[in-house]
Image (tube, rainbow, N blue to C red; front, top):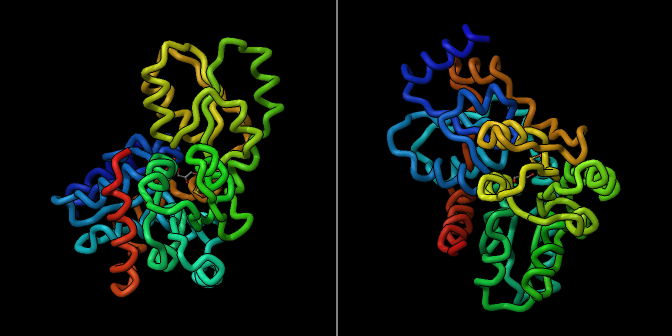
Length: 304
Ligand code: 13P
Ligand code: SF4
């Protein structure tokens, strides 16, 4: 492993590459990354990157696409093409057009967990870190929102607006695995524990939470909190960062099998091959990228 890490580091400097990694990546990938973050932080990093020629995006398809859209002069590499977010496939352009016919005046907000084509048909994007602020920034009471039904319900609760989910039942298969009874059992064992939950979890699961937020917001919350024990309701990859940043605190996953298999497809071997052979290049055709870029940039304008 040491050898492989050295080879990756050599290639990185030879080729002027940087590695961006999502909070759900394997620990060894987080360790070789130049930056680890949630989806909005990684998009911003990719957008603002000046020096690197290559960005290796250790995450899933839609995140690498956003980087390619926001910084088209860089070569964006996804170490394996199989790393696809199933939720991002759930919102098609047809679905958006169909919903627009039913609600012609309603703006379309898409979660960044969408493919570029869906973003191109939206008015603005959001992430789990800023969804409430994005919805509140819009001068409309009815909003089309997709693809995550749970996030749609969460923002409806927070904003009091009518949020129409498109499609009706978009979901993250990994976050669906979290169930409130597991939190109840863990709370018996750790009564002082603080519960942190991702908004992609079900309403029942969100009800168990002391804090609801994006992956990086959870990291910030845990760091600032005086609590010593945390029950975590999001993909287990986050535990590496939480434990590293808070060695004096205890983090327990609410459900041990909540693993995103797509995020875990990125391995050190694949990062090495990706850098060596400069594959797989993620490109978005400019007519689509141009429109999707506007929706992403609109999101960056919203203060959160
Ligand atoms: P974050 O933006 O909170 O990192 O979430 C991305 C994601 O895919 C959650 O499943
Ligand atoms: Fe997609 Fe869920 Fe994996 Fe996040 S955890 S990348 S939403 S499948």
